[in-house]
Image (cartoon, rainbow, N blue to C red):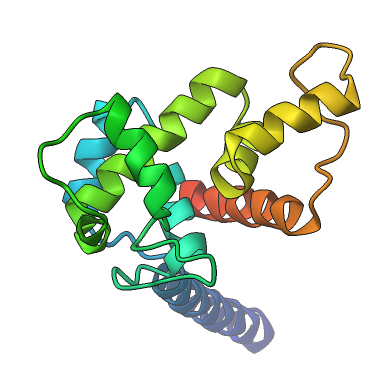
Length: 184
């Protein structure tokens, strides 16, 4: 009679330990995959018909949620937008008097980043190509599509730039984590 009770106690203790491990694991993941600037992300994602989890994944991979981040190529802010890209986007989505300094403002950066990402998704029709365009530029992706001669005109067999290929995988992986971690 003692043996089944002991086994039951061990099983209950193990279940409690596993539950605790799961809670700690989820807490650690939420630290690694935060949802900062949630109101701004929600507004801009909705405005440009994007999944907020995609926006979080891009911000996480681009700047690690550092609003003051500047890359080696002088991309700025949360979603790492260059001045040239910002000026191009402003011509499509005019805002009076914005300078490149506005890229350090989270609201402006997230809004323009979402706008640019939505245009890439619309133009290329796939997340992979939209992310590649966000990283390497739409001109590069259009060139790759011409050079690779894909059978359907829209799919690359391989992204020729190793760093862009890595970026697309990194954001896609982060997006998967965000979707699992914050699913409703």
